[in-house]
Length: 385
Ligand code: TRP
Image (tube, rainbow, N blue to C red):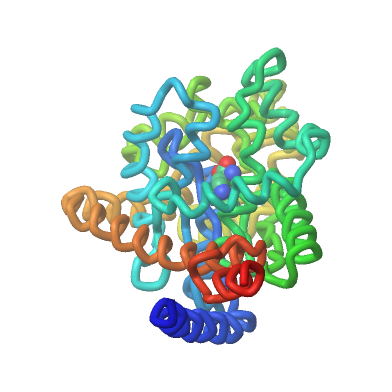
């Protein structure tokens, strides 16, 4: 018995050392973000989040960056299609690497490998009510989109809680995501506050970081609000140059702008929305020197006398300039799939170690760490003496 208590002391020491390390962590700036692997990433992901991630990564302001391929979350509404999720793990990893996520600076990992996340989710479930989940606007609209109204899978219904686990497991201070993820962050913050109030200060309160650019969401090339694979209206990061050009040349513009002389409308004009997202003054000097900036081009278009084809060709030049280095880097990584596999494996192992520490802290706070410190045994010895 005495021996047992002594070996526990080593554990206590380790534990305190961990906590001390974590104390230093408090001042750290940590990013956690991710995507569901349900398809290749497209230019909407790029302007909405990927580009920003790379900037944040290269700013040197963050101590740790975790980028998660959320396969477990993808399964919450693709339970019957595990092959789709599996086949998109590598696609998404390649997309990350090709836009400039650098595995030396950012940890790319696969969610399901970090089983601690599932355990955290289970404990957080006690802190959230069914009615609160029902009020989550993102969940609400996704239930409609997927025709889940009559029978909602429980796992899907609870995914905001699992997202709270994803974020808190890494003590993330900063979560760079699109506007649609705002309700998830609010829900996470509520869970953090509740947990800390009930069990003592343990979890880190995260901040959402929304995209800076005015164009938060790119429409599909057909002008429809949402890009979707089934509508065939996405431009993928991995798409060949000729296919991108074809999609740009057939993009939705102003349906009433029939002859060149007609005044054109910018409202809902996809070509201009894409230009807003992608072009800068430098592009004019390079590809369209008769104009000095986008405003001049827009003015000419609304006045009349500027044809769609000219604008589309310009957009094509602008987008190809942005996409060709991405495409080239993707090719390089495609030729080294074994290395990408190693990047994912190493990243997942690092992430798991991080989440293990947090889970230990959570279990300690919840007083369910029976075998990690001598306290439980000591209490019982005293009680039964
Ligand atoms: N819900 C996100 C998406 O749809 C993916 C995701 C899962 C995520 N867990 C996260 C994003 C935690 C940010 C933080 O793409």
